[in-house]
Length: 179
Figure 1 (cartoon, rainbow, N blue to C red):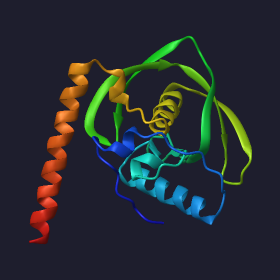
Figure 2 (figure 1 turned 180 degrees about the vertical axis):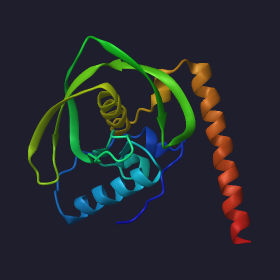
Figure 3 (figure 1 turned 120 degrees about the vertical axis):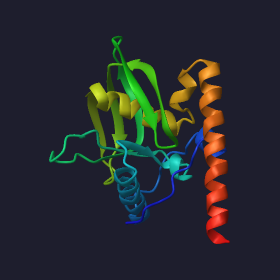
Figure 4 (figure 1 turned 90 degrees about the horizontal axis):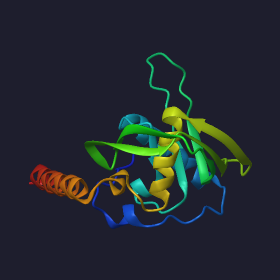
């Protein structure tokens, strides 16, 4: 398993629609392992392949946050929301590609999702609470959408400017580290 760098917004790869996965092979399993390791290390509760610059429809998530609780890592390949409740929930969302920025986003409270697992088997499951928010957030990534796209333009621009500044600072640090 390998920790992989997470792209920081703005990056055009975060706005691109990911391609469906067709081959269920060792490379896909290795990618899923790397994604889970990267997500846990970040730390985060979800990660989509486009956040690593890989435009494939793969996401991982684990919304178990209690200390000493057993992790419940999930790998969803080619996921699709097939049902969504009319009831809505508001969660304060964040994103590993938009570090230390949070905003309230309204989404369906319950969703039924269909996906393929690593063995190539079709799976369906209903999610609610934080799990529902997380799976919708990660599926958005696969469609080139970020949580800030749900915000008013001024707030979205403010967060984008902060991320541009962060990227400049990180580039400067990397350059100075090599000198």
